[in-house]
Length: 497
Image 1: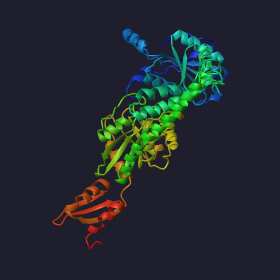
Image 2: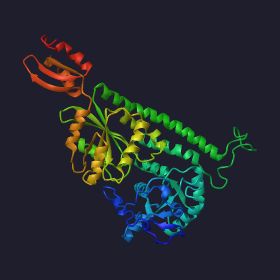
Image 3: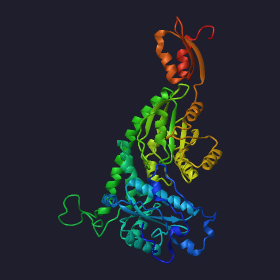
Image 4: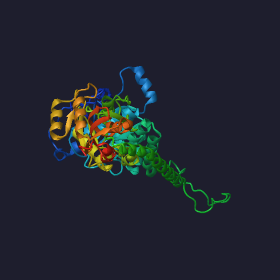
């Protein structure tokens, strides 16, 4: 961490008002947790003017390592960043949690977090996000720490990015660009890469910026320009924008073509009446760990934000023997960039098309209710409002018992589990069995052995109550859907017909 001297009188270390501060080493542990000393229940209006104007230093966000050789190695390959947040509403703890999440995002992207500051304002400054005076102080902090990048905890307008960069003299990126960078690193499938590329181009289009006059030059209009270059021409920046728009149109066509393959598979599952369950939730809540625990799938599990970008669909079986599919989906985060929601809409359709949503939330997080609200906002965006939902409170082994009680009281249909230890998994499987839609028709049929496929279909598409082998064939009693019931009708014994 940098020295404790303040760039100006009204800029102070966060530790001054928050003795414990934040512990950065917690960001590196399996369950990200923060230690706070709780301030009073004051709202923003009760702070005096000097407090509202203060740029608060957030202690404990440095992730530099103690071993010098390790630090030198990391400094060679990682960007060195200072985090900046604007605290406009909520409590001091909310502001700290938000910046701590930004630190975790920066770590996931491969950055070295040197320092973090929070600016108390009614709303972000229209020109420089934190105000001109505070931007000068931020420049001093950048010089003091030797940072090469500033990350802002919000989506900045093109003008704000340009003005803040002009003051601090290093690269400035916002939360949206950071999340896009993480997605670009983690996308593995062809479709995932195309979706990220489309979102990045949508983000970059209004933010193209030229240094000097290189992007202001016009083509054509002069002598020797050659065929098709005469006339007013277009500036280089206009040419770049046109090329980006053409690439975006091509990407959208490619994504639409790739979407067809997944839709065919989904229709096939629906035709066979296989119920589907989608696992949705905040990033790093433990969705992939839960999928592995429920199905033994062996999907990548990593203590990193957005480790899963490509949806994984696995077959599973309820305790009563009914088949269903489990889909692991991309994680959500507060203020997920709308470019990404739009680009990943086709992958998120797994949630909207499912029969049941397992909404996974990290029970050990300081503010799980906020995570639940952020995920539900995205679920609404993809049109999955009518799908039944079970709140699965994961990491129960590391959670505060009072938090668990509070969540289970608020969320009427909820269950506490630990994907790591297996606690509560059996109860969750029973709950899934109870909530999945059941076939509507109950039939009893004597199926000849020559038509064994009908018995097999009853096992995969329906719910077999009993199957008894007799001399004439299989005496089957099962709950099935209407289509299969019609196929079994010829074999219903006369006394039952």
